[in-house]
Length: 242
Image (cartoon, rainbow, N blue to C red):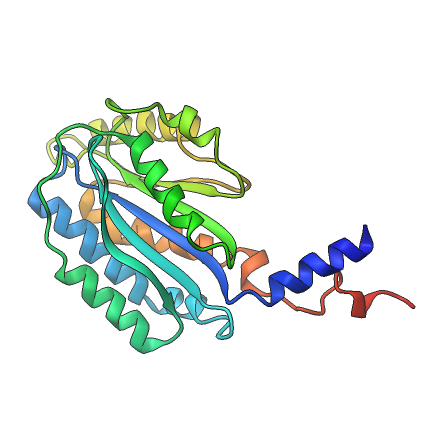
């Protein structure tokens, strides 16, 4: 058993990517053109924040790989950014430029969370070289089309699903937004998130999206298992007594 554990740690240390992060953005009928732009620009702003840059570049030899897609109804999701390893400033700037240049494609009015989760899982399956696989789903409503999210997540193995829930952008009643975001958070907690340390982040309207995304990314990228990895750590054979 000790030999197997040592080999597993060694294999992990040799991986070229420390985390594969797939981000799915909601473009269903409840999201208007202004809110779409707030999502894409908000994600770009979050990635460029100083604390996120520091977290992204924490282990230069094992960068974070990012993919971004948009989803709505049962139709196939649309990839905005294919897998890109953020190994330095040039790669980060290329990613954020791509996000800011993205334009919305025709979508569906319905909300197919299950399909969105399946698409993200398929993307993650293409990066077996990464130590950790995280799927992030952003959304402002409950599933009303396609497979149930709970049935989809039950098939996931070694995938963490986190969520960013956006409260209705109704300026006339702050209390109503608070009530709605509480209900949505409970729904995503019960039906969507999955895996060790999975969590739900909240944004009070799309104007709050960038701040919420920044906070969520910092929590994910600063996980102890990712922030530091000593290839010859306690689990490595070199640290065991002879």
